[in-house]
Length: 349
Image (cartoon, rainbow, N blue to C red; front, side, top):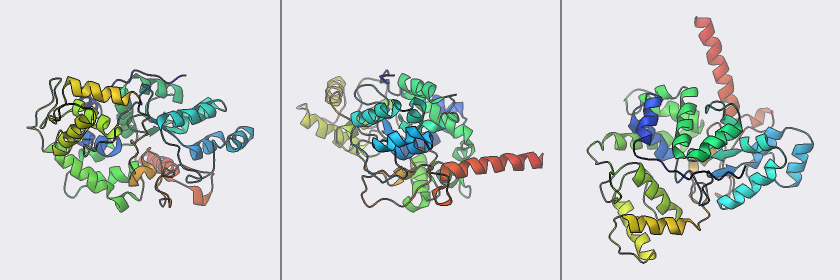
């Protein structure tokens, strides 16, 4: 696999259609996307954005000659934080290619993929029988990546929690945050940011959807979100990547226009978008575009946060390690809880 896909971005209506697939408010899914799925789902070469995670490769390989080789080549180690992640999508794919040479499926399972940064090991709950079909689907476009995220939400029974977003006295945001982000979610206000984003998206019904090639202050929708993620990738801060063309996005567009020798009017028309696309073509984009995310310890669903490493740029994502009491993580606990829930349901019936 060369991993080169379509590079197709979300189109107008994709988020609403995905929300209907799992029967949740569009505002709830927009809130989750805003918090979880920053940036673009593809790099400049139209490959899905990935984060290769050596501590996951260590687990997926298991004991034996393959693991020994991976450790020797620096592609696997027992715990995150052993070495810093290399910067840039090209470096991530170079590591993946070396890991694939050892064990393809284990390597694919050890990456977080695309817009939602879903760990390949979660392919079954994301609707795929194996990691290869998941990766192939993610290569088709951001819509397919978003649909996989929704399938995972449904499999983990978090759609009910999303239907409770914004409801006083109900555990919606807390329930979602704990399962998706890990037990330390409250330490960085994950649930409150979810609620704030939900209320924002619930209250902008009168904001017009972008229906033309020209994006400007007051526009909203998937096209605005793509613009914001492009600005972020190029180092211009548009504020939250939330699909709302507000003052910070206007200022980011103006700054980009100045840098690109364009008329600085804060309006993203065809010339501005073409210039941004040309600038991005030579940009080696990181997952998250270099942002430091406190919650990235569990940004790929299935992990249990652990204390942040001293260097904020070192590998902050955690995954199940060797089967040992101190190595149990959210991925393991989730499996236990689901088995327990099934057993309780059987007893109740």
